Length: 179
Image (cartoon, rainbow, N blue to C red; front, top):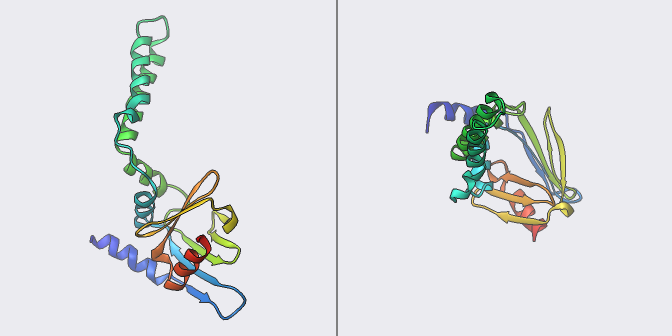
């Protein structure tokens, strides 16, 4: 592994606060972790199903063709060149989807900031300086355990919970709630 990854991992470990309390009523697990690049990479790899079909380039081709067709009309050439450029950008986004997604996550406000995850009878609560989100167990329509975490689907969104921020008791509790 690269030295910068090890430093990031070390800094993440230095800022970890972890508790799991099973002696009180119900279960409660709290841990703080850093949303670093390795976390975002894992999230993408575990939650995105990559489509390798040539059909994924249809929008890019349509923008480019529309732009070239506009050059033969009375439409201002700037609009035609805009559509051609838009087709090029769309093609790059399709080709480099993972890198594109990771870049957007790394320039977001939440990147490299701590997040506190709380798992209890109510659900999974994520809290940071920028978000405060509770995912109730009852909102989860579908759940899939991957090799490195849990992919939870609600009516409109997918949520990914990494196992590297969970201990064995938390993993067992999530499995119990999802089954």
